[in-house]
Image 1 (tube, helix red, strand yellow):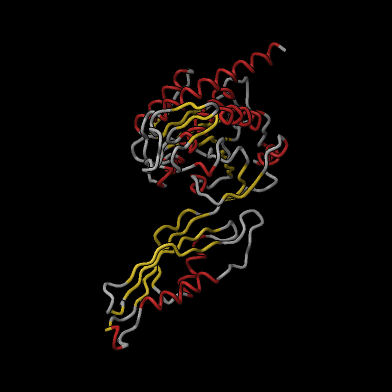
Image 2 (tube, one colour):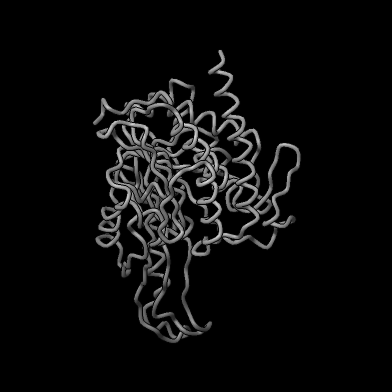
Length: 366
């Protein structure tokens, strides 16, 4: 009974300290590539608990050692960079504002809540006598822009990872798959001419033929978790003046792939079937998924977590090992004005992370 009360007291203290760190992170601008000061705050937080910290650029990580030497490794990862605030904020985005259960501020929901919750979870679990796995926490930079100095730049430093827990706002439901992203620039090539004399080859019309093909095409393989591949034309640009047939038309395709297709397969289809020139802008963020019988999925279901497929991207796309995405807050609050997270979501997030991981045993999968 005494040990249970002690554990509850430790959890309560960690929740309070996590909320204080979240306030400090909100108050410190940390737009992508500008995360120097928040990286220092995270380092100081870990140091305050006697944790040895590693730093590379604006990425901070720590490694627990309360495990056997040959234990598998679990990575806890979230990010501390934010987008820039939109112009329709009605509150100061850099002042953490309490309003009942809500904490307002830029990055509070995406992904400050996940970051501080994972840090608290790491502190709690690495003070236990022994874990069946080595635990690493990494709070990283440049997630919002998939930048070169983000989590991808430190994965080699971390060594072999057997499981990743990626902290993003999911309402503490567990994303067991995530759609990939392909961005394609297309150029339809025609021939200029005078509009009044029916001259030239109208590149706009050629582009429309391709756009209709994109709109109407369905890929055969549909994921039971992520659904179908989705292709959407999102931008178009052509013409210089009203009486000139345009010789070229540029349009952009946003493609969200499921785990049944590699991004290159979609690109190959477009190159073979469009008359427009196809140029890859971004094609390296592939879909990801984890086996539904993986121990972390089964453990999540055992403690009552719902599983789902996520249509939004995260640093999960950069990891070549099994991952799940789970964190406090709601995805629909990300990147909006007057972003907020609930105090109860932080508390429940920390407790759920601890419950998920404290009984997790990966040895059967290694």
